[in-house]
Image (cartoon, rainbow, N blue to C red; front, side, top):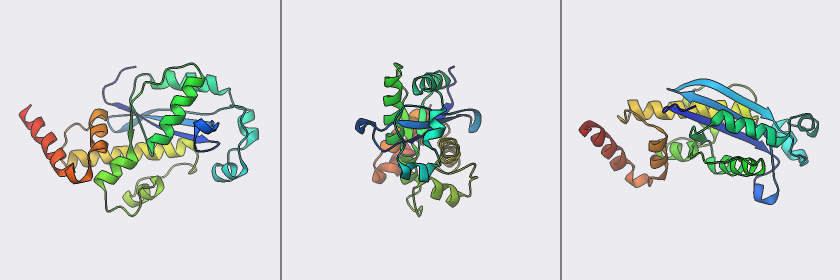
Amino acid sequence: MSHADRIAAIDFETTGVSPTRGDRATEVAIVMTEGGHVVDRFQSLMNTGVPIPPFITQLTGITNAMVAAAPPAAQVMADAARFVGDTPMVAHNAGFDRRFWQAELTAAGCAADQAFACTVLLSRRLYPDAPSHKLGSLIDWFGLPRTGQAHRALADAEMAAELLGRIRHDLMMRHGVPRPDHAFLRELQACPARQLPRFLQTRRESTVVA
């Protein structure tokens, strides 16, 4: 599938913070957006054979029994890779999810070439006055809907998709960016805060000239 305006919002639940330390994913969810709307979803628990620490179960509600009954991680990740295709991705605190995406796909023998944008970095650029840049806090600050249980992959991916929609809306309506696509979002998140006004002005001017 190749849709120019599609962006996939992803979230993992995991046994810990770092795949380089042996931590593995326990659940993945992907929310496919197009034109600011959710058009498809993918969600699955996965069994890696790695025990879940009690404090993680307390946080997420995901138990060892639940993942023991889940499909093998390699199968889930192969399905996830097919679902995403070449669609670029976004996550809240994308460095975390990108590391697990790459590690789990590598373990499954799949390529992991998708580019990532980060709604944490984008929110810090665009909303420096936000009381917090945590996902739930931003959702509440904007009055966006919460769905499902926090710290479960699908609920968090849904909220990341909602936040992405708000960011793209504000870029169009408040900042005059006519098409804030994934490539633009990646440029924006890398822009130093002090250079942001000039960056946005240059993009508006280049669009008018074009």
